[in-house]
Length: 262
Length: 262
Image (cartoon, rainbow over all chains, first blue to last red):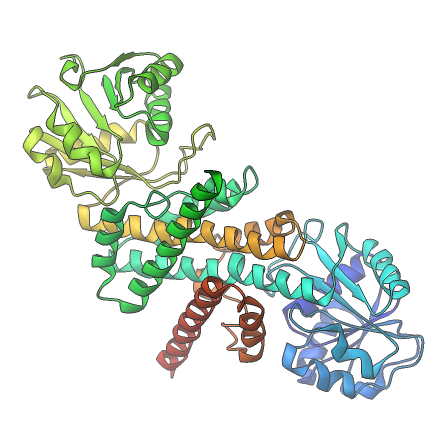
């Protein structure tokens, strides 16, 4: 398989490395800002192109890694041949968006948070695959199975829910690390102190389901402690509101659980 | 130092191990439910007692690990001698609560999430120490410094903020893992798939501050994707509301950051 990568951001940076490491050359790289395409091609080889109509016939797989809102525009400017497969890598974009622009269309969605320059262990990251028909889906599953060990078929609805779950488990979680950092800063304390707790919280889910690992004032419905915390947070209405609403949601979840067991 | 532990829950289980491993015998264990005290003393040695007035003269340090709401009641039933130090282990309880019940009072607050039966690496957990006066605080810092490597002085206000930051970084974070699990379940997908993402999200904070690690639709103010997610969540108004409010808070935080840089 000869690969072309469209986009030169974090996903492109990581995916192109995974392809190359598995023996699939990334022959062409396009980016809206040509300099960035040139930078990436300098790092990983291949040629940067400035015009989407320049995809060569030797390319078998065209991977769109641009931001969701630009996927259709990028796809519409391609002039692909019958044998070329077109995929995007977006969690919350349907496969349908690609259908007008190629016969064989699909999705390769890696469930991970990508930061440029921080290498990832691809052996643990699950890749969710969709193909326009079962023949192509099988082909993409087989191909990606030679790049990474974890490939799973998932349709567009499932992929959207994967993305939503990732927003909660990764994006929102990281935001709470930021809030915690701000609270500590106000008390003249280093964020450093929280690191063992953050790592242990994440590592616990390797041993048990998150519902069994839940601790804290809301889990115990410890109204007295929650009130003290809300009092301290009252000078920051945003944080106070988030604290109250998440705590309430936790209380409700475990009340419901207790009732289910009755 | 001879230690007595009051309470036989998760904190007692872990702390008593830390004391014993450092050569400080836990001689007496009390719990409201005597069977639980007996169970813990069976595991770690020492004697279980059923009456709080039975603390022996040989005890140097009495550690209250019961739930916050029971601390004062437990302290009030003790009959301590002049040489005996009384501490609690609560994040959100002031040192003042102990003052009527002993001359030397303090706090030993380990910042960690404790799950009974899951061993912890005490070498990484920070312990926050407060003493009623600087003489006792120094004494407690020195003593705890022989039990664990990370001891830091923190007053009751700072400790409360440590606890609040832990609620965000640990309890609320774990709750979002639970929500993510529910979203995946609905899509017929295993929670397993999220584990690499959760671990990477936590591990990132070892390399950079959380504000630099923030990714996701809200960080990019990608209204289109957020709307799609809210649409999918609309059958679960609680989740929809949380998604909207946290996303809004993220958008605001980074807008503010961008303005600060202007």
